[in-house]
Length: 304
Image (cartoon, rainbow, N blue to C red; front, side, top):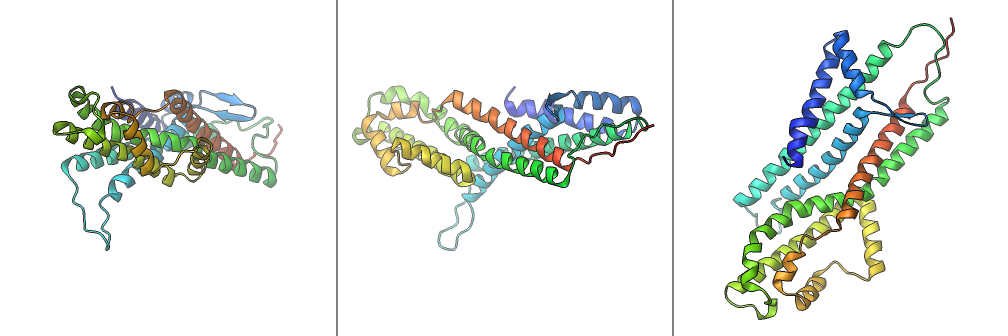
């Protein structure tokens, strides 16, 4: 089962079921759903749970998949200075999958957010009416502002790992499928350079070159979509003295054969990709927790 299959057949359905249990107004069903959602992960005075983790995960996916939809649609936006480009069948298929993934992610975000909120309302309703009540929320308006500022700041910083995750997703969607199609032809053109290619190998090298340009487009698109990610990537390129332009691709094809370029066309640091994906979810999770803590009302202390 693919990652999108896990989202479609486990994460989203579980969120829907938990939301419906909380909407049932049956005490036993609401109790079960609340127990699942409120399995606590406590960091100081912040309480994280299954609902916040799932919501943060779906929020990251929603942002990434929406960017994919925008990229698919941007190819066919009518420009007064350029002729209209009609989508090919393959492009229509890619757009369909991008839109499907976006709507699945958005559905997951809505259902888990609703379940999170309903669980909070249920816990308030079942809280004991008497006795001393501990003050849970921020103690002043200033503290609320601090928590909200921290949450927004962390959410902004999440743009850094999200940029890398977006780049990896673009590679998987737009570069890797083309690479898999061309790999069977690589053996016939082993050792052939772009400048020396002839016949079928010339067509092969041209397709590899187009795929390399698509990788370049993935880099530029991810940077356009993420402000902090773009700044960090440009700073990293400056430190390495690397320019993301046509000249870099020309140098690549001058040094390597077409088959070698194809092998590495979707290459990416898996460790960095994994760390950035985890960091993005954790950052959004921390931002949600801080914002929720800032919005939480502090009940007044009551005594019997």
